Length: 446
Image (cartoon, one colour):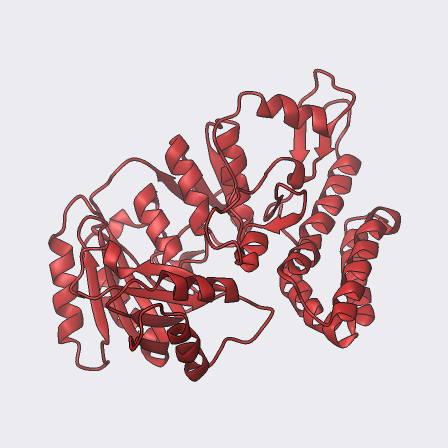
């Protein structure tokens, strides 16, 4: 279960208010928000929610005294959203269902999911605490441990476990996060460890769409995707799924179904290992803003410095079949605790950490990475897409990369032109195609 809508954003804002000592009123606002929501459900939960707000107050006071937001503090504060929402959900279910027929158990996800120690770049505290990865190998004893940790009195009645998405713990027992929108990843980790028959992700949109429906209402529902197609969509900008949610499902060959809480009877989008050649082009996705770094030498040390600041790699171009000959990397900034360095500072920082003297790098910012995702089982569509992009006269194209093996074409463009690019590409490659029956309903049909 995730935090209530927008609460994670409010908790990130709370971190900065704690620095200024303005956190008491912000915490009180969060408290009223959750108590009012509980009241709308017919619940009075002041006592049950009180420990989480007490923890939040203590953590914020420590931030204020230290005049610094550590990655560890960030994780502790932001994790409270999921703890609050599951406490409310657990109490609601207990009140509205006969405990003699079905039993509900609240479980702290930090007892279930443990993050993996990252052997490299020990100075990268940001990713350790806010973008952790967990082991997810099948554990035959896991279900038994899950049960024993959750309830002392077991019976033969059906049992439903209520736990949190997005949070886990490290080897020291400290709270860690799985990355923004990481509840999907939690579900996939738990499903893989339990060797589940299927994993269901319930969200506020009716499945995976061919583009961002909030930017283009001509988006088409994708009734089916294979793991590679879905993983690439998530990796390159589709927000409906977290990129890490796909790997556990892929490795365990567990079908993953994306459905909507607003349209529960709709079939949603199915993600599994089956390869279907149609439609050849599945989606147009966009990640922005991004930075582009190109250098003709190994610059691992410099990149590690950027990781520690909060940058994430989207795309390492040397790992793909591409027209670009020099090593290059595309990154985006994901640290909400501080402003992104400007281009001058970023260039200076990067070159200071380059081990070879007199070596300069090319760094470009305020860019967007647009990705056209299609089937890798045939590649005729890739040449068509590349030709269309190169011939596009309305908008400028900075770089073009393609990977036939992955079934993907990437465009690097100026950020201010990205939405226009996405509209043109979606219209030409998806809306104007003949195989419309291979898609599900359009966004406007829901």
